[in-house]
Image (cartoon, rainbow, N blue to C red):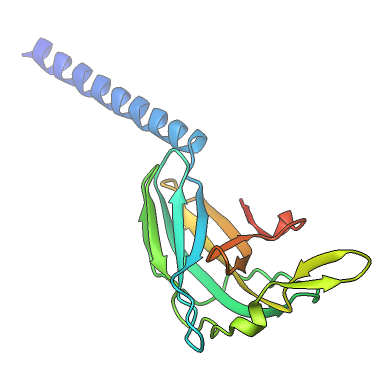
Length: 187
């Protein structure tokens, strides 16, 4: 009976040590293989004169583990083309535009823009030729979307993705703003 009890205790200690090793290996894996949630692309549906611009956002987790978006904000504004852009101050106390979204590694999801997009006015956003020293093209106004979302990994480490992109109406897509790499990033 003593031998059985000792064997039972030894087995119990070995099971506990094995479970501890498995937990440590999992924690190490999660700390070195993180999620990376990005705004893969943003696009519009058909642009109709006098109607709101319908915007869709495509989020993707290009990381190796699950991540959960727990707070997000997004806005769309009309910007005069020659105006200097200022990225909105990043704040942890912003409204939650999308709710909680969990994306496994490699998973993607397309989400409709929550509310308040600008109205389409073709004459404002049309690409025009301008004659200066050479012929160049530009728009008087463009539409920018900007936002940020906070997400956490399975260990509870919080990360941030921020973005600002401009609409190219001919392609009905929002693109990175040239020469402004700091406006679109992931922590």
